[in-house]
Every structure is written in C-alpha cells, then in structure tokens.
Amino acid sequence: MTSKPKNHAAQEALSKERLRLWLKLLKASGLIEQEVRRRLRSEFGWTLPRFDVMSALSRESQGMKMSEISEKLRVSNGNVTGIVDKLVEEGLVLRVAVPGDRRAQLVRLTPKGHEVFRDHAKCHEQWIDELLSGLDADDISGMIRRLDDLNRKLDAED
Amino acid sequence: MTSKPKNHAAQEALSKERLRLWLKLLKASGLIEQEVRRRLRSEFGWTLPRFDVMSALSRESQGMKMSEISEKLRVSNGNVTGIVDKLVEEGLVLRVAVPGDRRAQLVRLTPKGHEVFRDHAKCHEQWIDELLSGLDADDISGMIRRLDDLNRKLDAED
Image (cartoon, helix red, strand yellow):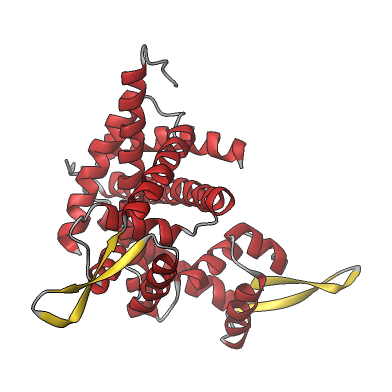
C-alpha cells in the first residue's frame, strides 16, 4: 500500500497529510468516546472501564484471570480489582476457583450479568449506529479496510 | 452521505458494521497514542498533556488564559496549572498580566519555549509519518474526507 514519493517535497506533503489524518482520527475517537462515557453514566450509572470489563467477560464463557482482563484492557490490576469487586457485590460477576491451582481464580459473568450486559451492549450498539450515521456502507467498508491495514502494521510493531 | 437501507436486516447489518468500525478506530487511535506517549517519555521526558499544552500555546502568539487551555484540551484546571507551573520553572512558558484585568493572566511560550516545541513537534510529525506509513496518499485523503463528515456531525451534536 505504501507509495514511494518521487521527491522530497512530495514526501514532506504526505507527512503533513498523515499528521492531519492523525489529528482528525484523534478528534473523532475522542468525541465518540466522550459521548459514550456520558451516556453510560447517565443511562446506566456505569463507567466505560466497567463496560469494557463486562464486554471482555461476555466473550469468555470459561471466565478470565484478573491478569488477563487487565492485560487485554491495558488497565492496571488495581483498577480491575476495584471494578470486579463492585460487580461481584451487584451479583453480575462471580469468582470461581481454578481446578489444580489453589491460588488462582477465574472471574466470570453470572446469568444476571449476561442478561444485563446484553441489554447494555444493545443500547451501546444503537448509540454508535446513531453517532456514526453520517457514514454509509461504502464509507464504512472503505475505512475498515484502511484501519485493518493500519492496525496490522501497528500490531506488528507493538 | 447517509443511505436509507431498504429493510430491517440491512439496517441491522449496517449497525453491526458501524460498531466494527468504531472498535477498529478505537484500537488504531489507542495504539498510536500509546506509542506517542512512550516516545515522548523516552526521547524528551515529556508527558502527552504537556506536549498538548505546548502545542496549543504555540498556535496562540498572544497567549491563552488558563481556562482557555483547559477548555481546549478538555483537561481539568488543576492539571493545566501543574503543567504550566513546571513549564514556567523550565523557562519554556511565562505568565503575563492582562491589561485592564488585574486578576487575569495570559500564558505564553518564551522564545526558548517556541524553539524547543518546534524541535519536538518535528519529531512528533516524523513518528506519525512512520506509524501511518501503511497508508498512502489515496488512503489518507479517503479517510480524511470521511472523518471530516463524521466530525462535522459530531461537533454539531456536541
């Protein structure tokens, strides 16, 4: 996908455009994230990290170790512990022992946790659908293709 | 830009694609931001909020009020105060009185501040150029066009 600019001026111009793109990308993701945080708070009294923990757990029916959650979400162990403690109190999550490893625990959604998350995730999808409604199917597939290229490259460097 | 899907299934599919797009957008901006933070820290001992404050000030030769900085960067007044105090200590920024308003102060880059920021901003641009090098000129203009549409709509709702 990378083109080889013919000269220094073209390379300079391309570099400026990449910077412009980055600032616009940052602006869009910041505005959307801010609005999602606001709605999670006002509709459900939830924080975004709580939603992200529930989302990660909803995809792992076997459960996850605390360290796996914090690694996946790039959040500190302390923060994950605080979030999970509250979720356990509310009956949305439970801690289960790992057979053969007395000190390890898995964290898993309860049936109520699955139900509540399904409901919240549905609202979250509707908010995103509304916030991104300025983009039609062609726009979306065009952006997904380019973001896939970009993320593949960034992942390889990470 | 918005298309009207013919039926409910098409609308559902489009909603799922918008959610996929959002998750990929979030991933890309998270990976790039993380790498920029890491390099600012290791190359210059700078935080990202410090870079952002210097960047905002570099564009306002008259200077900015503290409240303007925190509003522009969506950062708390307390955080901006801490950052500006350090920048003043290092001779990169100075506080000047506002004529006719004894309690107000403007914050402005010093000549040394301009020089240091120019240098750091140049490196920052090179990092972004490298991190986004998987995208060529067509990719970039295609994404900028769509992000402009998106940001215009998000700004209007904000």
